[in-house]
Picture 1 (cartoon, rainbow, N blue to C red):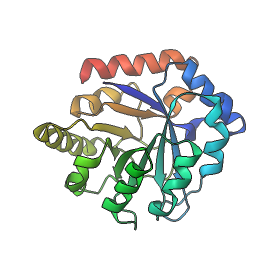
Picture 2 (cartoon, rainbow, N blue to C red):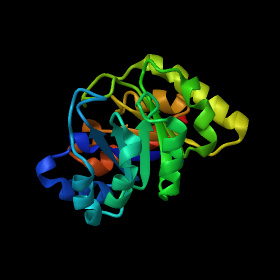
Picture 3 (cartoon, one colour):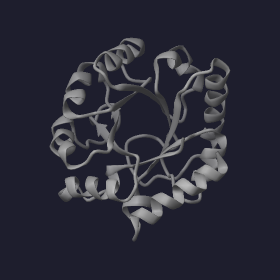
Picture 4 (spheres, rainbow, N blue to C red):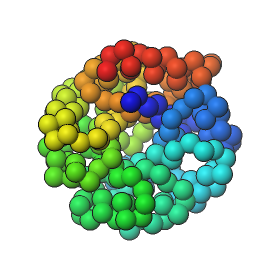
Length: 220
């Protein structure tokens, strides 16, 4: 099933609650919340208190992407803030299997993300416990970067392994997703699409989301 997850990195942070509500009204499936700590990636965004402050502004699924060095320490904080899906990086310093178990034990869906240079096979040992794998199609840390087509092979590899095992695991892509790239990612096997400026920067967010969904569905 195709899902669109607008990234709040491209939103107006001064009215974040209203922006979240606007995405719900525009037909989004998830709201993608990028948490950066200035250590794992060279940028800082926001933490659990900001997420908690907008939780009552929308019923959208909160798709929280932890780009932080020690995610295991903070799983409960993000669960309590209202996260529904918690995705962390396999390249972080926390033990991956233990972090996945913590997320699931807290009642959230677990996701693992890989950077562009990390092999898809790194997440194979975790697949049975995951709800989603996030393949970064840009280097994590900043919005507005260009889509890296060479990452599509990893999506194909993951989709083959997921199907081989008979699992129900979403593959999410994040980075440079727009009307020109969404078809490429969907054809490779991705079904959850993080879009920042392509949605928040559009004159009509509803149309932008509908167009992305339609293009992905045709290619998937």
